Image (cartoon, rainbow, N blue to C red; front, side):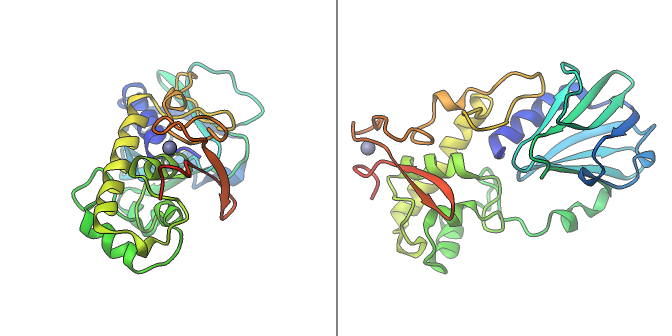
Length: 266
Ligand SMILES: [Zn+2]
């Protein structure tokens, strides 16, 4: 699933591609992925694109927005593409075409009133790059639960933007086992984890997101991201730990592949 770095990479790319263009047609091949009346957005100019957690908010003329969630396998491809079997929505503009592909069909596009996005996205915790994301805040949310720390990192109502790739790598950075009860973390560990989260997300953005083996993520120009070549432990089970030379292990936590070094994560 695209996480903060992947969505941010796509957003930055589309900022150059689509802002200032006018929507001339919307072709919907799979109705369940599009909510709203496409006629409302035809003829509207695209004013801007923002990232909210793992979602996109595209502002249009006429107090309307498109809210987009890629979920498991959604892709937004600009121009450089022919519609394929997984192309479910095509947004044509006066200068280029945006293709929404989604193999697993959990993603969606919604036409919403510009001011209503907060209601649409529901409760979202602070983003790691904001001033609300402090050691104090994390201490408060961790102290209330004995769930595995990794599950708390994935909870978008607590922190927005982190998914399986960066949760695994942030816990490695901080030297914390993913199975540790959240409330057992010391203030020092929480601080290390906060810094680890920021470090791996920054790396994710720097390398244009992660296109690991089983991920559908590609950039709007059709190329892959490179974070997978810089991942710490994610999908590296059986390989050597980059820090201590131990062997990286894989377990499942709540059905998600979880990767860690048993020697240097405690
Ligand atoms: Zn290690």
